Length: 167
Length: 141
Image: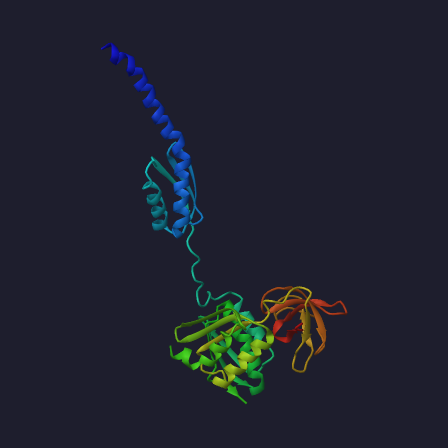
């Protein structure tokens, strides 16, 4: 019994030493392991991590929920990580702009302006579709069409000019 | 896809690196070609368009080439009306008062772009107001 009471305190001290070592050394080792994951996974590009006593805080931008949880799972799988605080924000990838924008309030006036010097041309705008009737000199047609085609940026979808007489 | 075939020569010409931010998309039987280019390139593409569809009457193409995107304040512009003087207006619209005139082929200065249709310009005589970009041709350096 005497022998046992002698080495017991040493055993306890030793255990405390081992555990405390595990806590302090591991944070920096964990960070290294996490940074390796960030560098090798394209999904994790741009993320940053901090580690405090095995608790990892992730921040940065993810493109969607799946990406966010993938990053969390990947970090959780590293042995020694106690938990993950996932502070990643979701910033969706840029959505393709619509082919034709919404019809702008300025479209009707812009059509009037573009046609002002072509008095024979009549215009009718309905839901972004412009119908041209009346008549125009053939050599002026390109100038008018060039102007009108740029109004697509104000929401002009289509120009119907089959009924427009070109002289 | 038939429209892309019909305007193949035009798409190929535009795709040859002369149009920046080029987008070619088809929706509801209309082909949309958008991009930015110089005035000379825009003219070339329009002439090509005219050779495919002589009267631009099929209603199946919107050729939206912005030739004014690269033009900045202070740029010199030539008045390219066909015969008449160019109106200089109080505001950006033909519904506003005419406050001055610029002669055909006169050189004016770009003060500010209000939008792609109307620019604030200044003549050498100091007249300032809005003019329709259709009649202003940047003097290409």
